[in-house]
Length: 170
Image: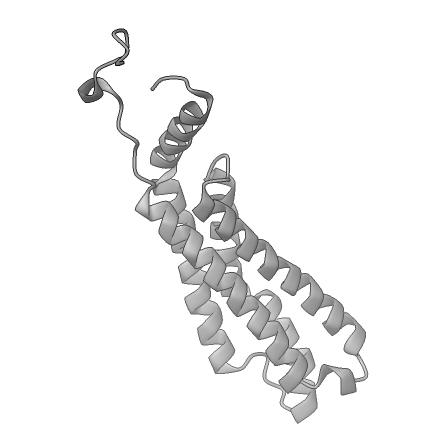
């Protein structure tokens, strides 16, 4: 038996879509995190860090960088699932980390000390690494901007999801 007091279907609020800009930002965070982990493995394997005299600081630095990569993977995953309370924090971190490689970043230090010392090169950074830093920095900066652009839509989507699960508003 239909409820006589229920709101007609045509007056019910439609579920807002998950913002495409936030979805793109979440995917970029995951890809960036994966690339960071690949970079760490590359330096450990190809850089032969275990054979250098000053391996301790490089290995510690690589572990810190790997934890950062894992953070980005998890943050992207949480963003795509809609579990992040607000995209502001992720957007800010993405922009800050995205701009950081342009100033040299951690990768230049690791590249120089782990690989450069092995070959005797006095080059601060390999051009391929520099290109990778630039592209990843631009991608992260854009992901942060996209997360900011989609912030209001994301908050509306979250509010709707929360109200739906608690039974309020629909």
